[in-house]
Length: 342
Image 1: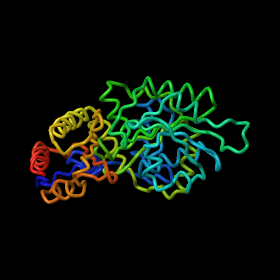
Image 2 (image 1 turned 120 degrees about the horizontal axis):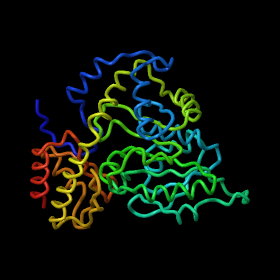
Image 3 (image 1 turned 90 degrees about the vertical axis):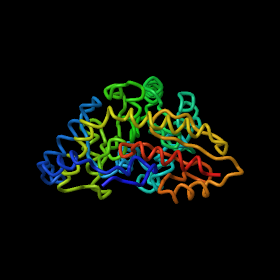
């Protein structure tokens, strides 16, 4: 049955396709906590090889993979550096502090980018016993709260050089890294200068559940212990891993279609008098705010009455996300809903 709801809230709302479901039901399985689920092992191997890393760890969510990475990289009382728009800072329930006893220093621009001069400025001097010791740099590519900004490999490598020269570890929150790879015509192997990488399978790639933490063998061995401590050990998770394998093998290149739809939405919003600002659209996320004379709640509810779902990011910013379940009819419904709002 055709889905009549135009659900632009997130690329996490996608449903598995018939082919993905077929792959899941046919997957050979075991007990992953005991280390004998062959499909999980295959997924971890495929993903780690794609990014030039030694090993991988399959987890229920990107929040968990990020939190495991931070827990292994840092000791309690230390400090990490990231953008003030970072997912780990805004959307992981205070997990950095709660799970690892780590605090955060932030810098960068309004689009989720952090620059070498920001890192240099934020690093705490080791000789100052009053300051928390800097131990980790975390970047998010693409930046969700930045409007889907792609940071680019050149900038990411510059940040790696600063981290290395100052003895800091370097983690990539790559929840939507494949959007950046496709948009900027990059290769996953271009990212092998990170110490650890988190990738999501349940966003633009369309899998129902799952993320992967990638790193060297020793790090992933430590991460497996932390995953168990966090309650993330799964048993016959090969069924979910099979969806991830299907996603990696079939749903990466098609992300350009989502980017094209986002550009169309950007153009439509640009033509509306009640729109105050739209962040530059580089991937599948459109962040915009309305003029002071317009209520975000009124616009949200106007669209909701027409079976069109979008997200209120905060009191100012609204978000539209394109994904593989968005069809042309949904785009037309959105355009009509926006055009009839006054």
